[in-house]
Length: 118
Image (cartoon, rainbow, N blue to C red; front, side, top):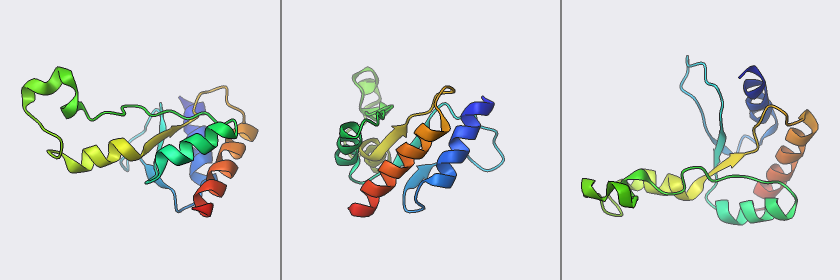
């Protein structure tokens, strides 16, 4: 958990301040299982990162209220617009205890360059 927190701190330091992050609430010690950012052009940036050898993830790509298993709740597209918007923008950066500091720096360099160019 401590290494994951260190990695998240590195991302916090090295990523451009223009990149929106999904952050833990103040006062909460978070295990940092994921490091999630928001990008309005997520799919394009993700494809470009992949071309540059940087793998990312999209955890929870579908809002729960629109999943088939929860259809009984009666929600329709548009019922929770913020949640639905987030599902199109969230991107998880590589975060695992074995990732090296140089790899974190490379992820940030590549992502910062892509974001600044758009």
